[in-house]
Amino acid sequence: MKRIKAIYPGSFDPPTNGHLDLIERGSKIFDELVVAILRNPEKDPLFSVDARRNMLEAMTAGFDNVSIDTFHGLTVDYAIRVGATAVLRGIRAISDYEYELQMALMNRKLQPGLETVFMMPAEMYSYLSSRLVREIAQLGGNIDGLVPELVARKVREKMEPAHKFEAAAQNERAKKTRKKKS
Ligand code: PNS
Image (tube, rainbow, N blue to C red; front, side):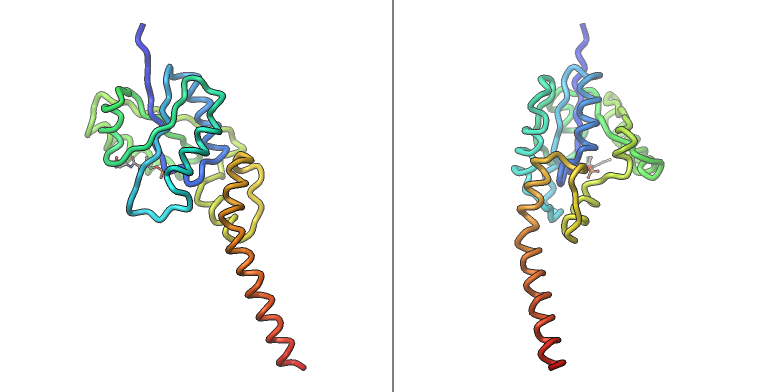
C-alpha cells in the first residue's frame, strides 16, 4: 500500500494553536507528517530554532505519526531529501491565498512530483498568526488561548525582562514629572 509522507514547513516563531490545529488535521490524512522549521539566517527570530523545535516536540508528543525537523535551503529539496511527496500549508483567509498560490506553483515548477495540500484551520484560529502573537506579547497583551500553555510560558519568560525595564523607565519618567511639578 502506498504511504504518503508530507512535510509542513514554516517558521513557527512561535508555534501557535493554529499550527497545532493544522498538524492535527494533517496527521489524520497523511501517514507521516514532518513539521519542518526553516533555519533562516537572515531573519531575526524571537526564538532560536532549537527552542522552537523543543516547543513543537512537546506540543506534538501525542501524535505518533508526527515528527519535528529543521531545514535550510529550498523546501522542495528538503521534501525530496526526506522522501515526502506532499507539502502541507494552512490557508486562513483569502489574504493568504495569493502568497500561498504563488509559492505552491513555484514549488511545482521546481519539483513537479511534489503536491501542495492546503488545509483550513478551525475558524477560531483564522485571525491568528505568529507575527501577531509576537506583537501582542511585546506590547504586554494577553496571549492565553492563542498558543499552547507551554509556549505562552516561554513567550512570557522572553518578554518579562523587557516589560520590567519598560515599567522601571515609566516609573522614572513619572518621578521626574512629579519633581518638575513640585
Ligand atoms: O511560516 P512561514 O514563514 O509562512 O513559512 C514560509 C516557508 C518557510 C514555507 C517559505 O518561506 C519557504 O518555503 N522557504 C524556504 C525557501 C524556499 O523554498 N523558497 C522558495 C519558495 S517558492
